[in-house]
Length: 324
Image 1 (cartoon, rainbow, N blue to C red):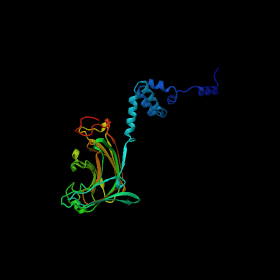
Image 2: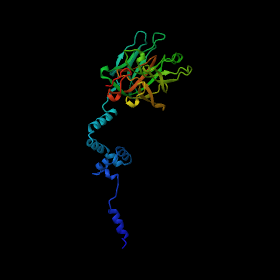
Image 3: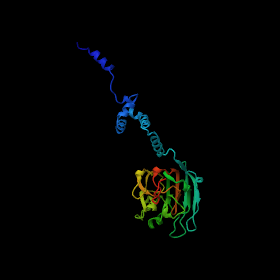
Image 4: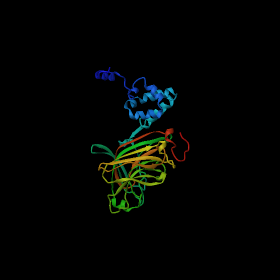
């Protein structure tokens, strides 16, 4: 005798359904995780939100069952630390946060003070032309030093800046690398200028008539980089800069150089996002702000994030073949 349609519908509703996404909710999660290959578990997590929500518990239980819980926890902690949660942060908002270093007898005068622009506190640096005809200003500036023995690694640097060239005609008629403004430099200051690295504004010499042509440049003589141009910049415009230092093993190259990603956004809408440049693999010993030649620079929102060197960061410099 044929079953009535209403009874068939009721039976279908009452019958248990096989829903793989629901299997991750209860006691079936552990047998299912034991049955599937690990790669398959990862794929299911991408397809099923319910599985994805259960993944931390599933992997924790698997690690405990296979005796790898200690290594797994270490990996979790390292991954969280890589996000910067335990990093130290230094703020250069106030002038008192910096140490002042005076110019030598051949350099131009240097002054630094705090000013308020559009409601924001800024550090203003005014540097005059050097007394020597071919001299440069590399001593007078603000600096922050760190203990070399700490073996610190810079993780990220953020700051805002704007600049004004006090003699555009002179700066554009000189030789390349002869003039520079708004330098954010990493030391060591005790060594020659060729050991420094960082960002500065340079006049574009190939356009001697256009006194509005300037470019933001990364300079690192430690890796023989005479200037990687980031983007064109203009006087009086505020720019937000982010430098992210990638110490991970994936960033290594044959010359053991450090990858740095630089992003810049100007208030005029101009920008350059995540340009990858190369840098020396050296510890953070100091950094500073100054003007290489006659100019006025303003800095604000200066923030430096750093932490101690770890084995995951690789070696600190090309002359060190051991890992900490």
